[in-house]
Image (spheres, rainbow, N blue to C red):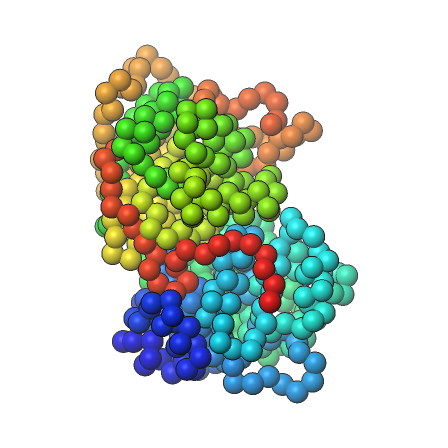
Length: 438
């Protein structure tokens, strides 16, 4: 099947062709006809499957048919869990709607409200927003959602994980009863199904790339190493194998900062992104990483959610996630579009149970590699992975760590070269994050 067979408007097909795409991904081939038919849809798909274009293309097609008479009103609302994902979705809207007379706006917190207010006053057709900032505008009567024809909940599972369920329900009260509803999620838990049952009418269901599977194109390796020596091992792996464009995951914000600083001192261009960074700092870091100026980007799970980076060859779990499913989501950022990728995990004795949970989930044992000079000291005992809580002196919520440089909580706040992999499909490629308004 080709994009030209899906019934999309010539202007949209032209934009798709300009991006070099001819064939839709499985989620696009299944979802686009359903959305074009005006039906509600529940799509089970992870980041990297091209799901963004799976809903932006048919939505653009619908809006291209003409708008109601009178003042321009918001006709499509797309809710996302994070700033980065919101920016990338809106960029997808602009990319594939470049030959249409439609206006879009991305709206999230961490930046001033005045430019967003000005854009809203000028009139927009498609609004991509995070729930909190949207409700801030709604409370100040800056935004009118009475004309919304299509609602999209993107990465609904993560929005629920982040505690946005009450915000979503508040947003729903601001929308017309009659509308088309599209919900995308990496998993369909009971909570997701309950949410969908309350807002959807006889939805169609499509599913690709189950979350609990890892791409066969991703080589997975475990280096067992003492928690105190993780940073040094990572530096050696990067330098000796000449790794570039490495996405490294830590559990905590302060851990991401500390690791990035250590890498910089070792002469490796690195930066960190997490919730405590300003939006401008996060955007600069992402841009530098995608452009190749930064060799390493250190991120927490939530900060990295929704980041699609074209041809990302390496993912490193500096610390294993506390939830096994997050491991699959992390390593799914490489090994895309037919290209190979490498996922490396640095595992200390504290994390052996987490490793067993991951292997049980993916139904396979991960290859263990011994790196000469970094063999674990058998006399070191396992210690609990401590969870930090919000405190009066800069404590951070969530995330945990073992002790020491490999995962230690401070008292006060504060392999061989692999082939490059690519997103290669609309909605799953490289996008620049930012808050551009049209």
